Length: 405
Image (cartoon, rainbow, N blue to C red; front, side, top):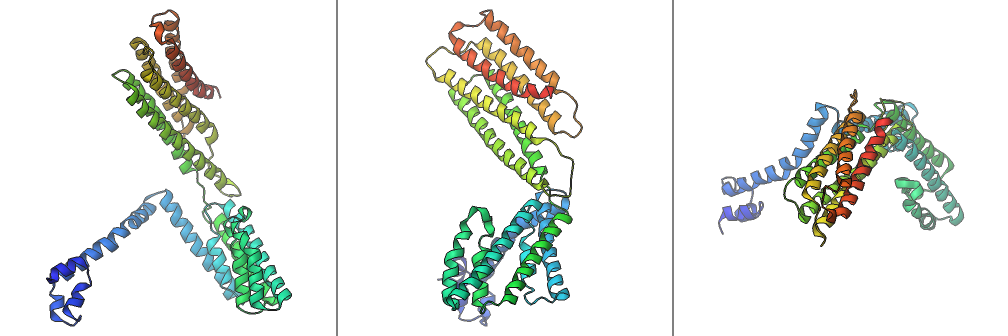
């Protein structure tokens, strides 16, 4: 078999084929250099590209990548500060515990740091007491370890302890496997754990305390944009040839918007949590009152899509084309209402276009009602007319109430 063929199959085969790295023919092998070059480019550089892009974004401007970089640097700083206090200043016998705990106490929110710090101190106390009690009862470290692990291991899966429950059995293992537990050693472990928790929480709360409002803002804006575009798409589609397949496609898009709404609620909850116990108080907007109406509009849009599917698939006569054309105009104005709502709720210095947009949409809707009452359209589609009008009325009501707040 030729050397180049071996090199393409396995990068290390030329070594075996030529016998030794000292062989002169090895370094003249083009297959070897191709295989090594391909390994370097595919295995190293390609895997580094996402990290390098994230690092570049972190230095370019505010965003998630910069937030993560700041939190990482804060974790490193908290660990170093805890080590300096425990080792250089206090000369603690187990100085390594303080930086270890401080490193993991810089969480994504100040509230999480406080709660998880309390949980960790509690689990460490449980682990220390369990180790001391087990050794006192059994008089043997191995028997004590078996007994203590049986008692403390379930804490790893207890919801009240979160992800800190593992520190109870872990502490007990460290205590019992390094020697017989002594009171001074137990107190030292507890003190240094408490020091690490204190340093981590203080650093997280004082040095650029994390606030996660940007993602909530962006998530709500994404919902509003998606809704406005979908309503406009449905209106444009109704003006042309449409059927059950088009209506199902609109429903899929509306359901995707519903998933965006759930993501937005998660982002809003994350933003609220980041403000708890946080000394930093940026300008706050009521995201709840902005997202709830958009959720209502999303559900009503899904209802419109389902009604259109029923209208296209049922054996009953379809809606009058004149009604559909007027209804498309109402949806156009509904999309404008969503845009105006987005501007009023999310822009820093918004104008006041919402009230006018709602009134214009209401005028179009009222005109459609008048034409329906005057029997201008075919009566065969009256059931479809009523269902579609109810859905769009609820849609406009969800946003129209906010124009009076």
